[in-house]
Image 1 (cartoon, rainbow over the protein chains, first blue to last red):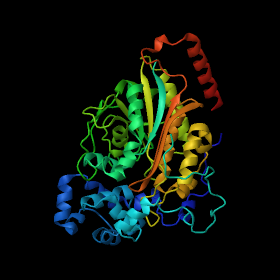
Image 2 (image 1 turned 120 degrees about the vertical axis):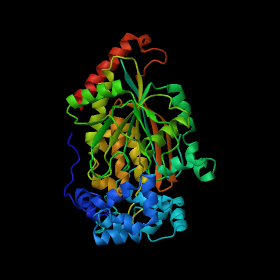
Image 3 (image 1 turned 180 degrees about the vertical axis):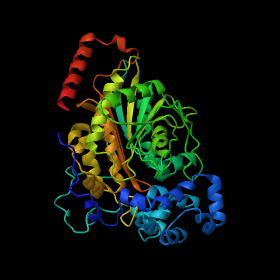
Image 4 (image 1 turned 30 degrees about the vertical axis):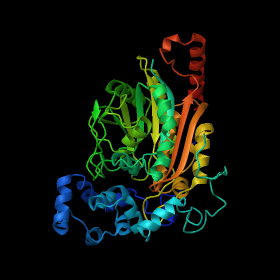
Length: 152
Length: 309
């Protein structure tokens, strides 16, 4: 049995609205993510909240990364090498539930985002690829189901 | 000899942990999620595992971007609870099983799976939320837990096929451990979800149901899913479902699905939960009471499985 193979390393850039955190982004966003990591300690969270700009001086961030952090531009942080599991710590430091961040990233209000999730989430239809290559005949699902209810 | 009796998949959504910690499980929104695990709690109380192997991913808690191990096995006696930005979750520290963990490490590394071994590791919601869902909120977890952290944070995670084969190697390791132990293996995370970027909120229930069906009946099909397909169909973070294939690889080819639960949403995520039992189980009282012929048949079947893979 042959293992699954990726055809082209950056094939995933075709997925819309998605920043796949690969080794390139990890290198680019190293200090941004390490800043977020530092927020795991209560005393650091306090120091950051007391003087954000001063706290950020400890980290060799690019001006763009610094601006994105100060302005809480969560998509921009991802674009500049941030990873969501790290940037979520910044949201937690601000006292926000995760859906607040999700709303910011999707350009919606927290209530609208919560309602979208309650309706079953964002549909994959039309959201598979920028090029439209995978709509819809290459779709994976095979068993039809009502989706929301438990079985068994 | 030790034996894997069953596998469980469980969501590990952090908001589920927050709902437990903030006593909000009675709210209608959360009731819908927790009710789905009521039967599972009864099942595991009955199954009484001696050890749980918890396959999960660390969410920038024990591992930052400094060191990114693909497979990290916890060989410590105890794993403290990480502070993920809100203070550590108020759950008991996870006690390990260092002897069995060391045995697994040795066995699977000699089987060519190059694990990272951790004698010190904090564990986060990825591991503790599934423990809550299965065991509730006891003062101490009822059995030792061996954490196996899989990198799904930095692309690429290990392939589904690699995960499946690691599961087989873990099974072989467990079965060569001399002590009579009943082991249940958890595969955590999933199901479809994306929590990053403009596509956040993606859910694909059709894909999830097909995945659950194949997990029980045709797991090898799932080992051929590429990461690209998983991310496209199940969300960028849905790729973590490869971890379930470690659990599945550790079970018989043919298993009994004894329970399934699926709901949308828990916070940003589709919750998928399944319990799969191996057909030859350890006897509840003592494995020595099992008929010899049955054991021989089981052993023969296992040998065949290994050759086939």
